[in-house]
Amino acid sequence: MTRPGSSARSKPGPSSPPPPGAEPQPRSGSGRRLGAAAVAVAAGVLACAALFFLGALVYQRLGGDSLIALVVVAAVFGGSGLYAGWLAGTMAFSAVRGDEAA
Image: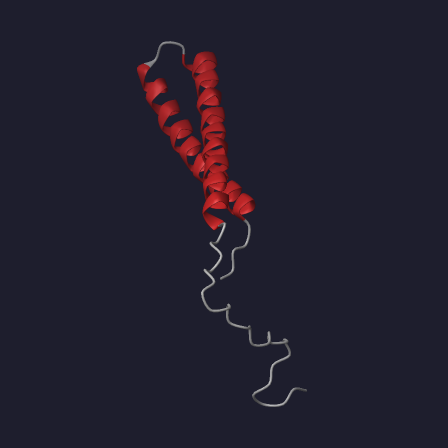
């Protein structure tokens, strides 16, 4: 059992301030964020395109020349493709960027 006011986690010690006149080091998070965004866009486009082409294949095989079938397939696969693209992009961005705890 721990004492009140104490914690089981170790707390980091006080950090020493930078020497006078020294400039703080810039964080390299912007480069990592830009790379993660590029990977996320690529993953999103791939997921969206895959469902778009799957919908086109379904329409070609089942719909023929029906305008109603085209609208239904475009709505179902288009909406699913947009969602899949967003989801894949979000997961790729999070995986590439990693944890940037401040």
